Length: 203
Image (tube, rainbow, N blue to C red; front, side):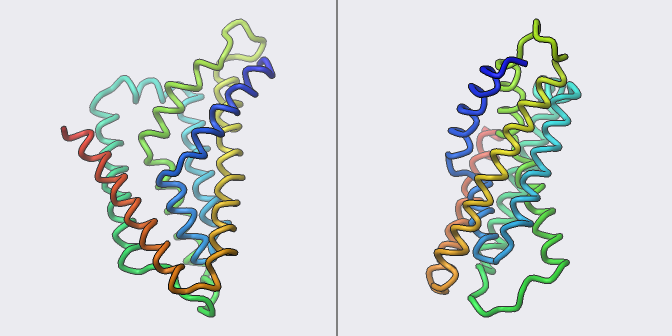
């Protein structure tokens, strides 16, 4: 596919990723818990799944089926409210706590996958934006072009959320009171975003 189209998509995608949302809130909280890699890995896996869905043509089916889109939106909203509530009740642990156990890392990966994979706004970005940067006359088949664009988005997400989590860890780990406050704020942000998704669907 044309390199210019890929670069143009990357520029737009980078701007969208830079806007704080549930992925940001999750990455910050995971950074405070010293689980940067599992969190970023989970987010990346969730967006890889979206890439496969869109490249296989299922994304268009979901977006054009009101019941499927409503179900995804409600599931994503409920999950964000639940996860945010859990974070508010149990904010990031202070420095000096034991290193996360393997089970904790796997749980963080699964949560990251759910945060990105159940994000209906993310699916709409994939469905509505990716096709605009494809070229039916290009030598690459359309599914391959969609996959390349999705992988570009996913790789950018991985880099950004690694940086966000690492920054949270490096800047706030030595400040336990601030760490707990920022952790709770990220949890509240998830609750608000989830609630807005639910209200948008119900109203």
